[in-house]
Image (cartoon, rainbow, N blue to C red):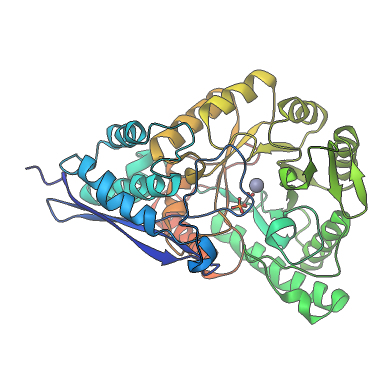
Length: 419
Ligand code: PGA
Ligand code: ZN
């Protein structure tokens, strides 16, 4: 028996930042090396994501993952026992075959994601390499530009803002350590700005640790406040602004209209709205500006605006959908989330497809996650240009702390924006 063969694979139910259940998967090799990974969970999930399997019933309001734990122990473990942890592609392919569905509804995308990432970590540990280096090789050294969600709305915040994230982008920083410091200083300043205008409750934060001021409903006002804080700090030259509209959540398919706070918009009207925003603000990126199947609308926006157009629900980290996007000219950046597709190998395929099409890469958190820092390593390992992992709360800041550590251990080069 070789040291890198899988001897044991187990899982347990743990809790994420929303106190909701998720999976923690552990792989142990014959040589005694382990790999452990926690599974994230989105709230504003797209329709093309791998299935997030939940128990249903009353327990944890139906969100338990005991069945998924059993699936790992009784169906996936027997299949993978004896396999080499360094054969990531082979292991992921076997899980794919065992599942046999397009939407990963048999084993569950959450069970598969946990196993795939735990195997990846065990492989890195078996080689005694940091995860980012094991995944990306010696070339994986650049630290991505953080896209930091300072004001939350939509499904993730308690504000009245229709768009989900209003972000700052420290594209002009010298290096990652400086980027994070500048973001933190703007965050402190913004807290004061919001509390003064909307009351002390405006300092409350949402699922991703950005502020959720309850009196705010107009995205332009949110961008004004971001600019006010940036300018009060004297960092005007460093920062661009960015939005994740998460427009699938705003779309009414029957009316074919998008609901914002001040009324409903057709696709054409919403495109005009973004064009106005882009001319009034230093907007460098818009994620999911339109509903998830509107490749044509994404293409029209990409044509129209200089800002980066990012596909999250549009692509669902799925190579086939990215192919379709490239053909249509839809967007120019991939939002990459491992659990949207279910395995590391399929994630790599999605990234390679996007890169061949000349797309930028933004590796992303989910609104539900734990303090497990595989995300930071995966971002560097995949050569991401950008990382999105929220703002405050430990499951967010631990990713930044890990990136600071990686920057110290590597060349510390800071990724360029754009691309
Ligand atoms: P989610 O939100 O993790 O709830 O899907 C993040 C995003 O939409 O980018
Ligand atoms: Zn999104």
